[in-house]
Length: 214
Image (cartoon, rainbow, N blue to C red; front, side, top):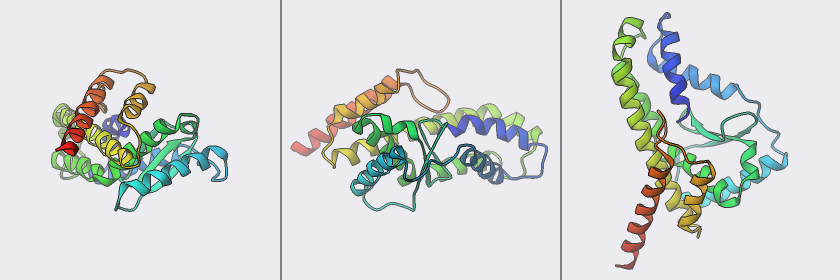
C-alpha cells in the first residue's frame, strides 16, 4: 500500500480537472506501473523471484487473476490495481524465507481484495468529480480512515503470508526475521510499526498452534 501516500498528492492535482476519484486512482497507479523498467524475464534475478513466486502460488489455494512484474529501481514490493505485484529485482538477493514472505504478503493483498476496499473508501468520501473545495474539507478525515484501513490490510496480508507459508512447511520465526530484515520502523501512513507486525504474527502463530493441538 505504499502508493497510498502518493494518492494524497494525486487527489490534489486532479482537483482542477473533471475527473472522478476512480479515474484518479487508476491513473495514479498506472503512472507507478509505468515508472520502472521491467527486467528481462531471463535475467537471473527475475528467474529466482519467479521461482519463489510459483512456490508461493502452489500453497495459496484458489486466487483471483494475478500478475508478477520484476522491475528495477522500485520499492521492494507493492501491489497495484489490485492484481499486479511489482517487485524490485533486488528481492532476489534476499534469503529464500524473506523472499517468499514478501511475495506471499503481496499475494495476500490480491487474495483479500484490498484494492477494491480502499477504492470504495475513496469513493465514499468523493462520490462525484474531484473538486478542490470538497477534497480540502475532507482530506484529514479521508487520510485518517485510509491510513487505518491500510494498517488493517497490512496485518491481514501478513497473516495470509504466514498461513500460506506454514502450509508449505516454513517455520513462523522465519516470517518474523523477514519483517526484521526490512529494518525496525515505527508507524507510517501506510504501514503499522515493525514490532506491532511482529507481535501480531507471533500471536496468530501461537493461536494457530493452540487450535491445532485441541
